[in-house]
Image 1 (cartoon, helix red, strand yellow):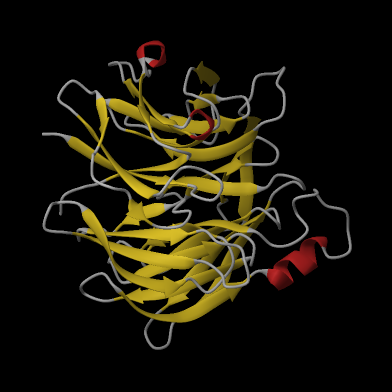
Image 2 (cartoon, helix red, strand yellow):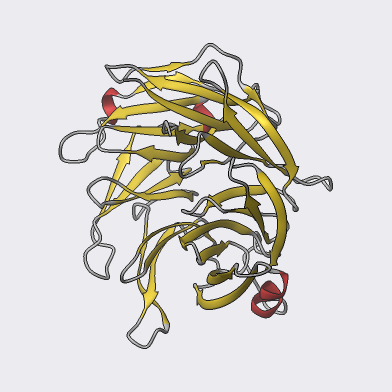
Length: 353
């Protein structure tokens, strides 16, 4: 059975046309599907519905008209086609998250510093946008009258993540905060901040990976190129358990990108600029040892991996880098293959529902 992926790209000032389909054959060789790309402007992040053949994409636009959320469904030819487009409610939507029960979609807006909440129908389409969480006041409280990193002149919500159907995390690059919200949906949807982790100034939290019971949050900090391990102590007080660089000691400018666990519960982080992947071996409440892997292509904006393959969106090489995974969990990047796609920035494995 062939593995299929949707590849998000940047279309502005590139040759990209939108979302491309890619598959791996039985030998792990990547092939870009011959069908035309799904025409979407700057589809930089995608997510699949938890139990439907429905995919959501952002159209990352920062002009006053704002961005969009695009809904794609599987068509007759087994490809995906656009079935719905709605304003996202803010500027530069850059991340999406769907609740496990398939009822809610969260949209992160980088330039607006807001989170939009959409209700989903039984067919997976957007039925309403009834809530907006604005981090503008949070930025004023943190940095309004103090010095800050040049890229932190406002709130920049970079990602959200559901902990469960009633709680979600927000990583705000502009405020150096990770916020855990309660989501109340018994009547009109409402949110309330339950816990706030304040990272060192200039951290720039971007994306997070997490484990539950107990809650542990692993945050890729884009500006400091560090990983922070967050949690709650025995009195339910937010605490930073560990923090480490994801770069070698001698390194030029770089920015952390994606973060995720592999099949062996090792933690991986992308380094854009250093053009490497960092791997940590978490033990208890520590991040463990750091190991770096080169050969993943220039500007690894996003990556995905399972126990067989690693796929890296190598933006500045205009390709998706594909490497097999050895039995000990290491990618064979020296023998990696590449599929040509303009300005790739996201890799989504498509699961048949």
